[in-house]
Length: 264
Image (cartoon, rainbow, N blue to C red):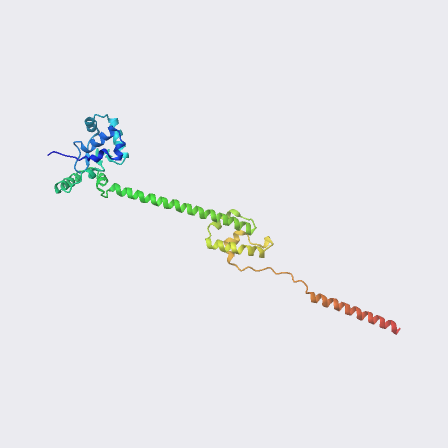
């Protein structure tokens, strides 16, 4: 039975083919029409056969196969010496029951099962691997985004710690304080920055102010601030009363002195 393979006339006007050299056009047509081409578009052929039939040497054959692989036109399995024509069904479709039966039979004989998916879109093992790789890439992207967010949050925490350090104004054990501060929740940091100014004001003498690490470890931002007792100044009315009292006593003493003088 004679074999026929279709090459549509649009092949010569295809924008991709218009850019190719005569050598590459000839080789691509050869891949579609050589005696080993099957009805399913996947066939086994050695490089020696290709070189002999085309007249090219091995180096040129390898170079042309690699070129069309890069262009996404074919897939070459070096392990099984099979070539897969990715666009084969585009030019050789048929609804004939005999042709369909022939294709199904030929597909069973394909050695590299991964090649089937390139022509017929069947989920093969290699395609599943590709999907897994894509998922891994997506996960890597998510990790990168998370790292960027984490780095941004880390930088923000560092800035907030420096603000706390300046506000607290008792600079002891900065390294340990920074390590503790970075483990705090954002809500806790907000409470600290709101509490520290009032706490520092209530302890103007630093020797009575807790060390910053003690403050952080003890969650002291939750403590009530006790205002220092102020020294009470004497009341003005008391001072006046005391002055008047002294004046009164002085007048009484003067009167008594005069009375004694007169009586003498």
